[in-house]
Length: 181
Length: 220
Image (cartoon, rainbow over all chains, first blue to last red):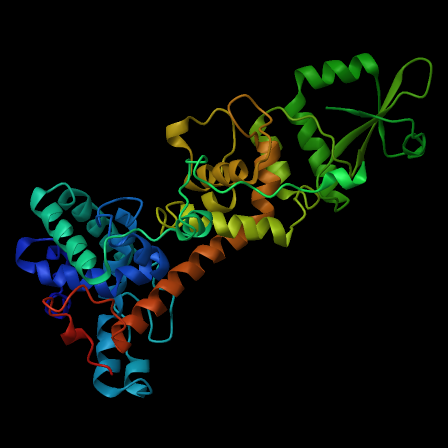
């Protein structure tokens, strides 16, 4: 992934030659874009190209952020977090060193559109879908494929009762309303 | 629309033009645009926000007095003019509520941000989108589409057959547009800072050991 960033060829990230770079991108950048909790909840049973998991704009934006900040982040990696050189390093699409208003830059938006179209095309490829399946299976190996239920369903499972099977559920306690009679 | 009131104080002013009811109706039908211009000119002269027509028919001969006031009723020839009035009048803005905005922010985070990262509209189109009824669905601005979706999410009742009219959309959009824009900018910034953290601290969620992502987790 770093090589792709250095050579300014992130548009080729979704090719068979750069599978490892794509996997690294999925692990490092995508959780931040789609929110970590959402990523954690879906990584084991949804493909990357699933729009409910990672939409095309999410992926394109992740690539854009990586391209924009790569030089600055590398400076941090080389010199440490409190490095002044890294702080003064200009990001790719920022107009000045201090300005953070890079999103209105036309070059950034053009690049974003290029990423968008590239991802839109490549997501349809069968090879890419195989890679995505491979990533999902790797996540399953690492974290298990069981979908963790939350809330009411989770407690129903813990108590040994299943949703929709009310016959097996224990009877609800009856309120002693007769005492008012 | 003409506001009829029994206020006689306006008729005492010497600067006012006096029309008969017949003349007034004829005047409105034949030259509404020119009439509007005259009212607006008078309003700007008196430094009022936007002019309106206040009609009082106190006398039995149905004499109608037209006067320039700072009221909210005005005869508009086109919906663009009315929209412009809604955009410019300080009173035509919805009262902002933090609870409503919280709901908007949640909607933006869950539904809008995954699909919209940058605003496609220009600044002017974002600030004052065209909420007119004549605009076709395919030609609607991004801001307008998002505004309608948010209103739907908030459970606002649609006041026209096809959805929300500009009477609902414009005051709402005026009240919340800056926050909506800022919210999206904030999300973008958050993504950037979180990605940086993951890149630097090696917080990457490991797929499995076979993938060489350790090279990225240099920072210990």
